[in-house]
Length: 369
Image 1 (tube, one colour):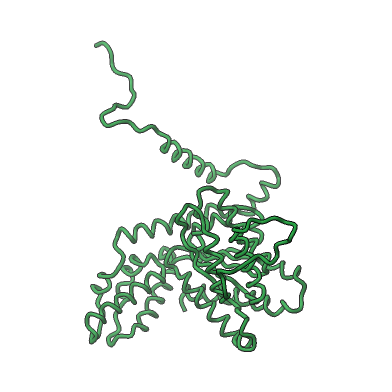
Image 2 (cartoon, helix red, strand yellow):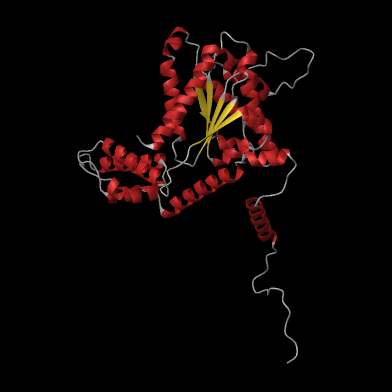
């Protein structure tokens, strides 16, 4: 079995055990006991690594395992979620988030929600729609006994005009998870790391899961990628099995080692070739090249993936870093000094004054003979 499949299986087992323990102990333990569990999970990796597919597989597994409870209690929704929409006004739209979350929980009359927790002696604006929707969402998550709430493309929540706004967004997620006792599982690209590092309190309440792409510079991962490609090759529903592994280097190049991108390429090629010729019996390398990512597209995705992996490596502090901080030893390591120097150079280049066309650089002119 390939490493990618192993990663998926292990992650599913971890999540399912946590969620099942949550469900099993919920009727018997006090709320303070439940708070000991993590409030949210961050699952991140490059675009096309298979995060959205993982969400579907985990949700299907949970629903199938709890089908008896769902049948006996139709109001029970063990797992659901939404895809975070990219902001179109410079900030994340929480009203849209609440509405689509309520619809995912099959909540009726969403457009007529009111805040039933409002006290008579506290004056609240009549048009405070967000407060009403949030209150309704908190109630729905509790009474639906939802065990996990998935948010796909969660990096969109961090797209704001300031770091303070990003911190506020993550505090909103933490507050929802804590208030409802429902863990929130955020799936996204490496940009989601801005959430993890925003506040220490949030890091304490969360758990990171890094879904990496295959790296063929490591011999074991190279073998696993080829094995995965062979497994996919055998599942293609066509008369003559294509020899994908003979061209594994090409498929690695156009997929960047991400199984999601590889799957999309193969399924898209098969679909369009069968539309052109329903009697087609084989697929050639030329067929796949016709629908593969362009070099510019692949280069951009590869650059983003490598930058994200480097960001993970740089931002993951060691135990020695923590000990040095606690002991008051704040001296930078050689690596930190190099990073600081690079950042200074970047900032210097940004602030360098741009000259008009034909304007000379400042220099001393020669005088005399």
